[in-house]
Length: 71
Image 1 (cartoon, helix red, strand yellow):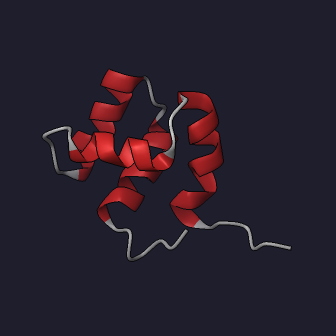
Image 2 (cartoon, rainbow, N blue to C red):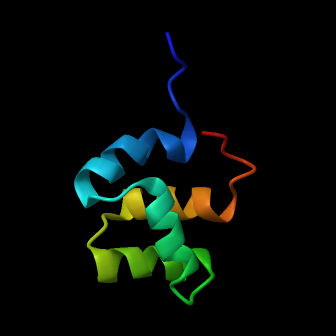
């Protein structure tokens, strides 16, 4: 049995299902957004793409600190 993802990655299946793009596509969108702080990126996802706070926070956390969260 595969280990359950922990941390931000535990949200990834829900994010992909709800917002219709792969995590890699969303990370590219964050890179191309023109903003870099955690708070700004969370707000970008919420206002421009309709993310809920938890999903936006998880994606941004993983995007900014991938070394901390292995998938």
